[in-house]
Length: 207
Image (tube, rainbow, N blue to C red; front, top):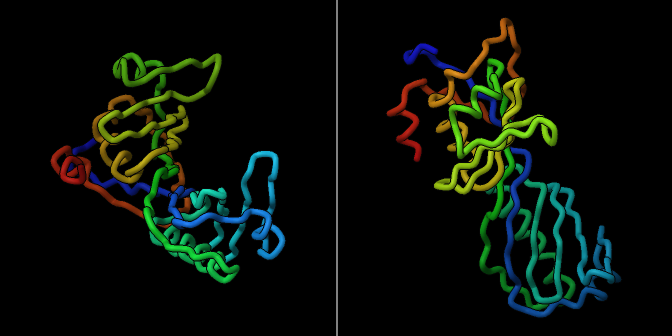
Protein backbone atom coordinates (compact mmCIF):
# COMPACT_ATOMS: atom_id res chain seq x y z
CA UNK A 1 0.00 0.00 0.00
CA UNK A 2 1.32 3.42 -0.94
CA UNK A 3 2.35 5.43 2.12
CA UNK A 4 1.00 8.64 0.59
CA UNK A 5 -2.46 7.27 -0.23
CA UNK A 6 -5.63 7.96 1.75
CA UNK A 7 -7.92 5.14 2.84
CA UNK A 8 -11.47 5.78 4.04
CA UNK A 9 -12.43 3.54 6.94
CA UNK A 10 -16.07 3.32 7.93
CA UNK A 11 -15.96 2.54 11.65
CA UNK A 12 -19.33 1.82 13.22
CA UNK A 13 -19.61 1.80 17.00
CA UNK A 14 -22.41 -0.65 17.72
CA UNK A 15 -22.40 -0.84 21.52
CA UNK A 16 -21.06 1.23 24.40
CA UNK A 17 -21.29 -0.31 27.87
CA UNK A 18 -21.20 2.01 30.88
CA UNK A 19 -21.66 1.61 34.60
CA UNK A 20 -22.65 3.99 37.39
CA UNK A 21 -23.85 3.88 41.01
CA UNK A 22 -26.79 5.47 42.80
CA UNK A 23 -25.35 5.52 46.35
CA UNK A 24 -28.62 4.21 47.74
CA UNK A 25 -30.39 0.90 48.17
CA UNK A 26 -32.88 0.09 45.40
CA UNK A 27 -36.04 -1.89 46.08
CA UNK A 28 -36.25 -4.09 43.01
CA UNK A 29 -39.83 -5.15 43.71
CA UNK A 30 -40.96 -1.53 43.85
CA UNK A 31 -39.19 -0.78 40.57
CA UNK A 32 -40.85 -3.81 38.95
CA UNK A 33 -44.33 -2.78 40.16
CA UNK A 34 -44.16 0.97 39.55
CA UNK A 35 -41.57 1.35 36.79
CA UNK A 36 -42.17 1.29 33.04
CA UNK A 37 -40.64 -1.13 30.53
CA UNK A 38 -39.11 -3.34 33.23
CA UNK A 39 -38.45 -7.07 33.59
CA UNK A 40 -37.98 -8.40 37.12
CA UNK A 41 -35.65 -11.40 37.31
CA UNK A 42 -36.10 -12.43 40.90
CA UNK A 43 -34.04 -15.61 40.62
CA UNK A 44 -30.88 -13.65 39.83
CA UNK A 45 -31.76 -10.55 41.88
CA UNK A 46 -31.87 -7.89 39.18
CA UNK A 47 -34.24 -5.74 37.14
CA UNK A 48 -33.95 -4.91 33.44
CA UNK A 49 -35.23 -1.48 32.42
CA UNK A 50 -35.37 -0.24 28.83
CA UNK A 51 -35.39 3.30 27.51
CA UNK A 52 -36.55 4.33 24.04
CA UNK A 53 -34.58 7.57 23.67
CA UNK A 54 -31.75 6.77 23.73
CA UNK A 55 -32.34 3.09 23.07
CA UNK A 56 -30.49 1.46 25.96
CA UNK A 57 -31.08 -1.43 28.34
CA UNK A 58 -30.11 -1.09 31.99
CA UNK A 59 -29.38 -3.89 34.44
CA UNK A 60 -30.22 -2.75 37.98
CA UNK A 61 -29.09 -4.38 41.22
CA UNK A 62 -30.40 -3.62 44.68
CA UNK A 63 -26.93 -2.46 45.76
CA UNK A 64 -27.29 0.57 43.47
CA UNK A 65 -24.96 -0.65 40.74
CA UNK A 66 -26.38 -0.14 37.24
CA UNK A 67 -24.95 -1.26 33.88
CA UNK A 68 -26.26 0.29 30.66
CA UNK A 69 -25.81 -1.26 27.21
CA UNK A 70 -26.93 -0.41 23.69
CA UNK A 71 -25.63 3.16 23.25
CA UNK A 72 -23.61 4.06 20.16
CA UNK A 73 -21.43 6.79 21.67
CA UNK A 74 -20.08 7.85 25.03
CA UNK A 75 -22.30 10.96 25.03
CA UNK A 76 -25.39 8.87 24.33
CA UNK A 77 -24.43 6.40 27.05
CA UNK A 78 -24.04 9.17 29.64
CA UNK A 79 -27.30 10.84 28.59
CA UNK A 80 -29.15 7.52 28.86
CA UNK A 81 -27.61 6.77 32.26
CA UNK A 82 -28.72 10.17 33.57
CA UNK A 83 -32.24 9.62 32.20
CA UNK A 84 -32.36 6.29 33.98
CA UNK A 85 -31.20 7.86 37.25
CA UNK A 86 -33.93 10.50 36.90
CA UNK A 87 -36.52 7.76 36.37
CA UNK A 88 -35.44 6.09 39.61
CA UNK A 89 -35.65 9.43 41.43
CA UNK A 90 -39.26 9.79 40.27
CA UNK A 91 -39.98 6.42 41.90
CA UNK A 92 -38.94 7.86 45.24
CA UNK A 93 -35.32 6.74 45.55
CA UNK A 94 -32.64 9.15 46.80
CA UNK A 95 -30.41 8.62 43.77
CA UNK A 96 -27.03 10.33 43.46
CA UNK A 97 -25.45 9.87 40.04
CA UNK A 98 -21.82 8.88 40.72
CA UNK A 99 -18.90 6.78 39.47
CA UNK A 100 -19.93 6.87 35.81
CA UNK A 101 -17.47 5.26 33.44
CA UNK A 102 -17.40 3.52 30.08
CA UNK A 103 -16.19 -0.05 30.58
CA UNK A 104 -16.45 -1.53 27.09
CA UNK A 105 -16.83 -0.49 23.46
CA UNK A 106 -17.77 -2.69 20.53
CA UNK A 107 -16.98 -1.42 17.03
CA UNK A 108 -16.90 -2.96 13.56
CA UNK A 109 -15.23 -1.93 10.32
CA UNK A 110 -14.51 -3.37 6.88
CA UNK A 111 -11.10 -3.17 5.25
CA UNK A 112 -11.06 -2.51 1.47
CA UNK A 113 -9.13 -5.76 0.97
CA UNK A 114 -9.13 -9.38 2.02
CA UNK A 115 -6.68 -10.69 4.64
CA UNK A 116 -4.66 -13.88 4.40
CA UNK A 117 -5.21 -15.21 7.91
CA UNK A 118 -2.56 -17.98 8.04
CA UNK A 119 0.17 -15.60 6.88
CA UNK A 120 -1.06 -12.88 9.21
CA UNK A 121 -1.05 -15.24 12.21
CA UNK A 122 2.41 -16.56 11.41
CA UNK A 123 3.87 -13.04 11.23
CA UNK A 124 2.18 -11.78 14.40
CA UNK A 125 2.66 -14.40 17.07
CA UNK A 126 2.14 -14.42 20.03
CA UNK A 127 -0.38 -11.58 19.71
CA UNK A 128 -2.42 -13.40 17.05
CA UNK A 129 -4.01 -16.82 17.42
CA UNK A 130 -5.98 -18.70 14.77
CA UNK A 131 -8.02 -21.86 15.29
CA UNK A 132 -10.07 -22.33 12.10
CA UNK A 133 -11.70 -25.49 13.51
CA UNK A 134 -13.18 -23.46 16.36
CA UNK A 135 -13.68 -19.96 14.93
CA UNK A 136 -13.26 -18.48 11.44
CA UNK A 137 -11.50 -15.35 12.71
CA UNK A 138 -8.04 -14.52 14.01
CA UNK A 139 -8.00 -13.31 17.62
CA UNK A 140 -5.49 -10.44 17.91
CA UNK A 141 -4.83 -8.98 21.37
CA UNK A 142 -3.22 -5.61 22.09
CA UNK A 143 -2.38 -5.60 25.79
CA UNK A 144 -1.22 -1.98 25.89
CA UNK A 145 -4.67 -0.83 24.70
CA UNK A 146 -6.61 -3.58 26.50
CA UNK A 147 -8.28 -4.50 23.24
CA UNK A 148 -9.16 -7.63 21.30
CA UNK A 149 -9.70 -7.74 17.54
CA UNK A 150 -11.58 -10.47 15.70
CA UNK A 151 -10.14 -10.38 12.16
CA UNK A 152 -11.93 -12.20 9.32
CA UNK A 153 -10.52 -13.14 5.94
CA UNK A 154 -13.07 -10.88 4.21
CA UNK A 155 -11.47 -7.83 5.84
CA UNK A 156 -14.18 -7.44 8.46
CA UNK A 157 -12.85 -6.53 11.92
CA UNK A 158 -14.69 -6.52 15.24
CA UNK A 159 -13.04 -4.59 18.07
CA UNK A 160 -13.90 -4.87 21.74
CA UNK A 161 -12.71 -2.88 24.79
CA UNK A 162 -11.86 0.81 25.16
CA UNK A 163 -10.40 2.93 22.38
CA UNK A 164 -11.85 1.00 19.44
CA UNK A 165 -11.26 3.81 16.93
CA UNK A 166 -7.62 4.15 17.97
CA UNK A 167 -7.05 0.40 17.76
CA UNK A 168 -8.16 0.24 14.13
CA UNK A 169 -6.04 3.25 13.19
CA UNK A 170 -3.05 1.70 14.95
CA UNK A 171 -3.50 -1.72 13.36
CA UNK A 172 -4.07 -0.89 9.67
CA UNK A 173 -0.68 0.54 8.56
CA UNK A 174 1.31 -2.09 10.39
CA UNK A 175 -0.41 -5.08 8.78
CA UNK A 176 -1.34 -3.91 5.31
CA UNK A 177 1.29 -6.29 3.91
CA UNK A 178 -0.99 -9.29 4.59
CA UNK A 179 -3.77 -7.82 2.47
CA UNK A 180 -5.32 -9.17 -0.69
CA UNK A 181 -7.07 -6.37 -2.53
CA UNK A 182 -10.60 -6.85 -3.82
CA UNK A 183 -11.58 -4.90 -6.93
CA UNK A 184 -14.63 -2.64 -6.76
CA UNK A 185 -15.44 -3.52 -3.17
CA UNK A 186 -18.07 -1.15 -1.76
CA UNK A 187 -17.63 0.60 1.57
CA UNK A 188 -20.12 -0.13 4.34
CA UNK A 189 -22.38 2.63 5.61
CA UNK A 190 -21.45 3.93 9.05
CA UNK A 191 -22.22 6.75 11.37
CA UNK A 192 -18.59 7.83 11.63
CA UNK A 193 -16.08 8.14 8.75
CA UNK A 194 -12.34 8.39 9.38
CA UNK A 195 -9.90 9.11 6.55
CA UNK A 196 -6.37 8.63 7.93
CA UNK A 197 -3.05 8.96 6.11
CA UNK A 198 -1.33 5.64 5.64
CA UNK A 199 1.90 6.55 7.38
CA UNK A 200 3.19 5.44 10.78
CA UNK A 201 3.83 8.90 12.39
CA UNK A 202 0.24 9.99 11.79
CA UNK A 203 -1.17 6.87 13.35
CA UNK A 204 1.12 6.88 16.38
CA UNK A 205 0.06 10.45 17.14
CA UNK A 206 -3.35 9.06 18.13
CA UNK A 207 -1.90 6.78 20.84
